Image (cartoon, rainbow, N blue to C red):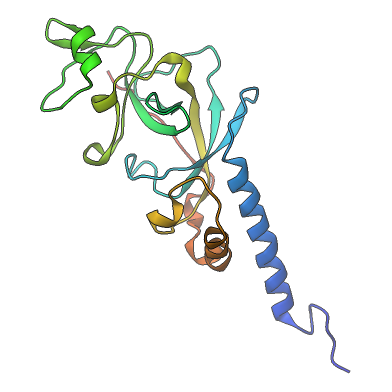
Length: 207
């Protein structure tokens, strides 16, 4: 009589392993939809745009440390609530801290910045941050909508805990539809960027 155990049917172990990994990935994704304020480290959702390439890729999921009362330094990558829509979470690089003077060239900057924060032809950073994406040509950042208020800044990404190389249209949005779940289940092994898992996310000093 044929054995029906794992040894007798190798496909059973593959199915079980795939189901287990898929479930863990789903839980990680669900965890990334909320940012509890009382944690020191929190998982955050996927980077939905190419604004931070090549530092962060579309499909990266990040573990972030909460700043608390401290302030980011120039060159840090920061996680913050988008000032124009607080429901959205943005990841950019802090390029200006309070007291800095920034020279803008060939940019259609936010009107409030130009009307209230220009000193001797330079932009004076108020309390908060001036944030920009590393991929300057594809970044919706402080050049267009203004400064990041300090209260909006939640933390700094620490590591990439998972990276998934699906097309942008699959990753965009926060809703979890059946198509997304099926796509991830089918392609978990082939589209996971294994080399990016546990990759540290570091800022760099800017003078």
